[in-house]
Image (cartoon, rainbow, N blue to C red; front, side):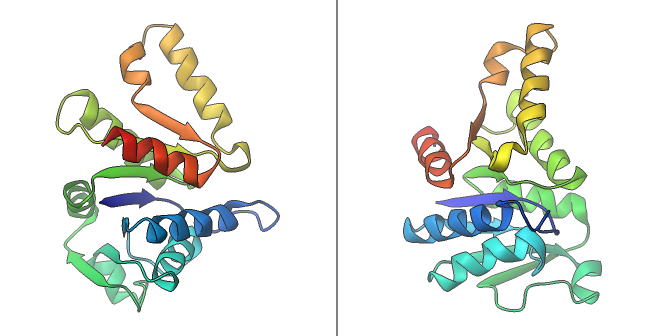
Length: 180
């Protein structure tokens, strides 16, 4: 099984548990034989989860646009680094490679990737499960908004249920594995 993880190229606030939870998720993935597919960077939460999987003996595939590889932002120790022309190809390749998707804390890129996976599931492009790791309540406001959007009939209840959310990496993995 392969899981694509979307997350920040930043580690977030140093007093938060973001880095610790990213590392726990990576370790748990490797222990269960789950391969990581991600954006290929060696910094922030991206680097932390990749390092955790690799350190635990797991496999990591990075997918990175050529322009970022040329700027030397690629992680140097990946199992495989796939070079693509642009961000659109990166997202399509990650979608193709993965059996499920996880969003860790991140910024606009992470949110955009999560919502694209969701929209594609909604219109039937794929049937893969996806979820988010809600570390330290990072996604609490987003989850409340999504519930509000559902209550206001802008998101159908069956589509809202597509998104799995958990506060513990092991629980999130378990739910995604059971949904594959």
